[in-house]
Image 1: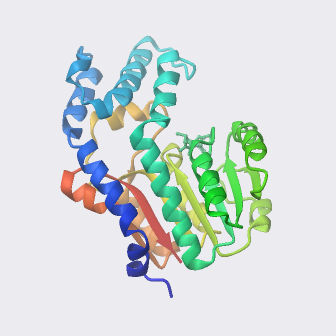
Image 2: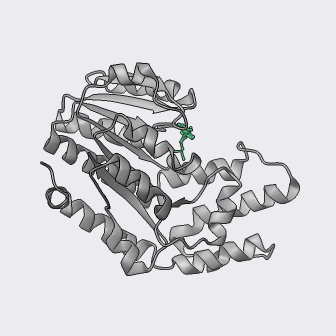
Length: 283
Ligand SMILES: C[S@@+](CC[C@H](N)C(=O)[O-])C[C@H]1O[C@@H](n2cnc3c(N)ncnc32)[C@H](O)[C@@H]1O
């Protein structure tokens, strides 16, 4: 039986690299939190006061507050689009994605996983990292990519051309709903599901829907570990992101999985940070 200790040993180098980065990168998270309170209160904040690690997120949140004030929210707002696009390519996002993918593939090798399922793939930033890794490691595993938005189907058609050797399938699935029969019938077990920043746009019971068919999950999201909320959480709610409190997730995780743990708990403790960002659970 695969144990927590065996997994920790398998991913210890990844954990060390990721946590070391987080501890430096997010060291000034409280300065950012205070600045988001100021913009929420309608005060001007000079960008020079914002720690570099947070500048893109700050611009995005400031734009959301501005749009809220004018009553005209628009996903196509150029500042918002540019900030999202740049964030997806930033060093932290890149490392977050690589850590989710590499940990997933190490666990897949340990447990003989036959199907990988990506949840909420969107434009495929995380999928691209997965495909690169599968190709580099020459793995024969099926990758099923899902999202509630048909944009994913478009993104994946391009990826299929770039990685013709990989067994890549797509399926539309809203994770607020039970997994469709078609998804269940296409999965070969053991199955590992992974994601980044998708559950925060749904609700915690989505975890139960994912757990329904997943033997292992590697979830990369903002999991609120301490229960404290800051102004940036309040602003993010305006674009449909909800805080995922660990205290609410824990009973579901305990019901659905044999074991679970927060991969980056060391960073949360070191920084006294409200969130953890990668969760591993297995049946
Ligand atoms: C911030 S994007 C993250 C995209 C990708 N995972 C990444 O890391 O680049 C959030 C994604 O979650 C998807 N999403 C939101 N609500 C969803 C739902 N109920 N079911 C499935 N996917 C959903 C969105 O369509 C979007 O692609």
